[in-house]
Image (cartoon, rainbow, N blue to C red; front, side, top):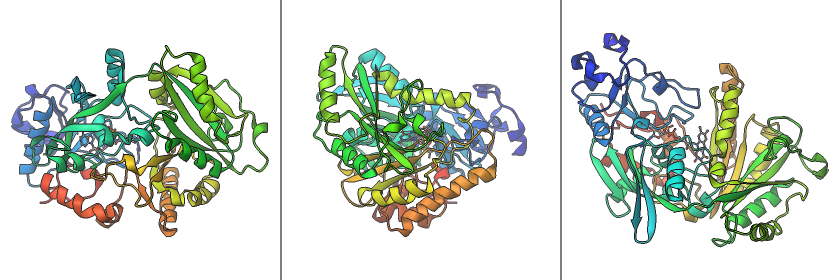
Length: 514
Ligand code: FAD
């Protein structure tokens, strides 16, 4: 076996390799795509940069048939596992397979792109391996249409975010991306290719949405579209009091449809001149200043920024846009002189984090480790969370954004596998998006990861109603606690669709049945 692994097999060069020189699992697969058993480096890494597990092989499928062949071969093998890899933007090795097979779904990215009109609604069929940024560009430039619900950053695959939830500032209105998928093609853990929706194979459909890759590999998704606006007015508003910030954010997200902004997010920043964590992280243009004299003397160590955006068309009269914006802003209690706004195209707005990526790459911090923590925290505990975590533990910042914004339970479908807090209509996304200096040492990164643990433990000890988003646990007991009363449904779905526990071993939920 080792001899096989030492061979370098060029990408797209499988035809030239004799089948019997491949690892047994990869023999006789008869794939249209390619197999690579040595240059597997990519598949052993992710954005988190804290875990590394080498797979046996990385497979670049041509389509669902190849994916099904690989899963079937693993199903027949005594112990093989299979991980679909989207764009590897997980933090804790979730898309890895230690000694297993990694399927690089990006090779299927262009397999589907079709606008579908059904019963007065418009959808797009896209590949599970497509990047959302490509979906955006193709929908807008070709059809003036766009998905309704996004993530902040779009270098993520459709299958990767649908396996989690996919949230951004539109989710308060349209729900997470999992609420915007109407139909999926899924390769189950038995290697069957099934089309599923609310009415067809519905257990698989709802299981796969937010299913952490446990029930099947999404090869096609039908995603709801709306007409794309031309322009966006993007606004940031600064608050010194958390209660004012949350009151306004909650007011905006609970307004009737069409009577609020189209995007509502927020973040916490440090009340000082720190170039990364402080005042200068707020203005939408680096050349703009931040007038700190406007901050009330009563302000504490951290401040809050509400970030909102309004869509409009080029044909809208500027004064009409001003009227809508001003009538909404007139109800908010931000610090009057700390308002920043810019008008940009819709595509620029949706792709806004790409600029952050370019900047971070130039500073060599894009590829350094990212010990991120994402949580959903119930509204009932968010004031205490702010007091204990933002105002104390993280009062000096984390070297990256600390997002906090409200979401509405009624926009989440509880038939999906996504787990959100147990109580109340409003809960908050809290995202601690830590960046570390280039070539950070393990001990430094471990310190940050243990601070994340401390925050999770603080939530547990104080009895907060919260859930990890993009969860990561090591023991099945922890997973049981995470899913709570939905655990038995999760286990039943696993037994139906991946009975040998082949899929997504990097999530560490189930052990491969041997
Ligand atoms: P991967 O990391 O490759 O895979 C994630 C999991 O899904 C793995 O278990 C994998 O096996 C499984 N999987 C992958 N593809 C498939 C498939 N086709 N079918 C079934 N299972 C599959 N999330 C948000 O909600 N909102 C944000 O704004 C947001 N911003 C982010 C910004 C950055 C810079 C990063 C790094 C992450 C961000 N995320 C955000 C988190 C992101 O949604 C998840 O990490 C997501 O899993 C990444 O997608 P990916 O395609 O890289 O998936």
